[in-house]
Image 1 (cartoon, rainbow, N blue to C red):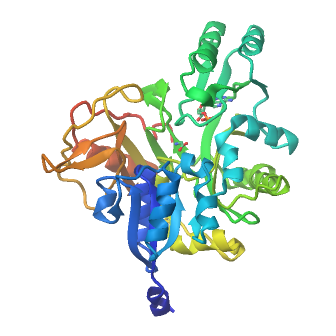
Image 2 (cartoon, rainbow, N blue to C red):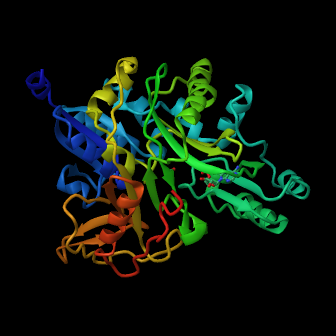
Length: 431
Ligand code: AMP
Ligand code: GLY
């Protein structure tokens, strides 16, 4: 059997170039069924295991389709980031007879439009924060004069995880609204807004594989979205993660399955938007145990993937295939019992403007620590790996407990340096 599996090696292309894509490539590399790996655009870390194509951007749909057609050896394309999914890359690849992992554009809208996802939850009674939607700035501004405070204002479209403003005063709410709708801080993503009830409790991210009928939740995790310690500073794509989120009990997981996960894939199916791929549920669990949806993503989270995929014991290609072929009911996910913690090293200034081109020194890292690259590139002129993005690296460590994993991640990130580097010191502090 294992020989047959190895004989059936497939070459795989991963689209994207961040820490999440490095984690996906890392998981694929462990598969006995995977042959050559390609990545568009990739980064300096991914380049160690995959042929990278930085000349193509993840959003250049037609160029990617041409690339796949020109490389007949590519058996599968894994589309990891939100924008190529929303732009219909999976649909385009399938239209030319190529296999792809990820939802079609009409299902990826569950992330690409918060107005869509909130209305879907309302229609199918999936628990979420109470909300109103607005396309007129004047009407939104009028509403904010009387709505409960704190309130949460969200740009409708994709905004790199930064389009959410939590306003603790009416003035902040007015300013946030102006920033999104009039100053267009997130471009056309802010043409419509959702204004919703502020929820309290603890957050948990549950990513799930689905073939549209069966949904298999992965190990739980939690992200830290604010830039600075103590959840201060601006929202970022995510500054660190840990898995499992041990406040999320098996009883809660069962309830989330019944009230959120299954109803969501059934709702999408009913709407003619069958979802295949990874569906990400951002949940808030209140003090009384109520579970509500904060957000959906149509993909692996980043840096959630950097703690979840190192714990996944299945051959990931088998799971991707089962999602595509509709055989996920035959799959059981197996997890490394150890906990994982990932701490992100970012460029000074991120998520606002930051400098690039800083040389990275890695130091003498423990051999079992995984450094996932995000905004890194090889500089041919200086012969070094340099920074090219806001989130630069994710340092992931596994340990018998969250506390062991955390200690190891921090001991190792300390050995890494580049000009302006910063990281949060309190990832996994309360777990
Ligand atoms: P989102 O991109 O919708 O997940 O929002 C980003 C972050 O903002 C979430 O991870 C939460 O920490 C916070 N957030 C979003 N919506 C709410 C809400 N209704 N109440 C409280 N916090 C929220
Ligand atoms: N870390 C949150 C996200 O990937 O959207």
